[in-house]
Image 1: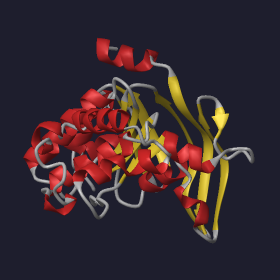
Image 2: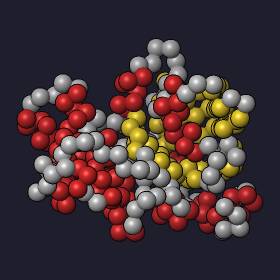
Image 3: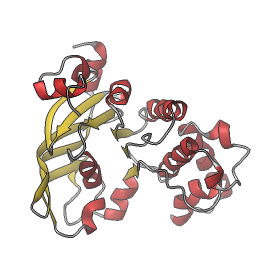
Image 4: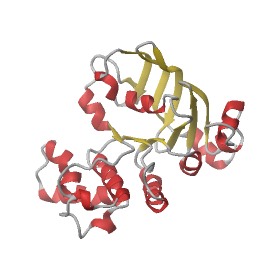
Length: 261
């Protein structure tokens, strides 16, 4: 085990997924998934389409609650507490666990209004505190230098990569503990992709990050831990780059070397 692998293995566990199964009607999207997600690290969940990756992310912040005809078994623990327990405050959970989707979806309005929408909704009115939040979140999303003179421009005037980083900044403004990203760079050019990845490396110092990457190459670049999913099953999980350099399961090796997928 190299030094990076050892550091990943030694991290505190922030999310624990235990024997999770999930069905859409009669179709099992996830089967007996058990996975530990370390704090202050980037965990990549990757594999072929239809493997259950997005479903897993949506279960972690309970976005699937209103989907009819579904059923779940098992447990998902955040800091040791079952997020599906009856006493769970779902609104508070979704504040603690933010999600950024593949397609950038900035709100109508300005750059400033996008970032401060959540804090203002939460009742924060102090101008100094709002300014601090604005600067902090845009800086953390690696966007401040590009938009500091454009804060009152419409958000749809930004490039696609800037809009995606704006969505990350908007999520950060709610002061989450966990950030879920579902293929956040799938529609971006290489330069914008690099800037988003750069922001993730900085963010993991303060947040727990789970990403569904848009490619194996991205997974290998950003992962502190990686988990390979196929047909609803967790095939293999390793810290560091082990999953890409020395996979234990033949199916993982075949996928990362391009024999299928």
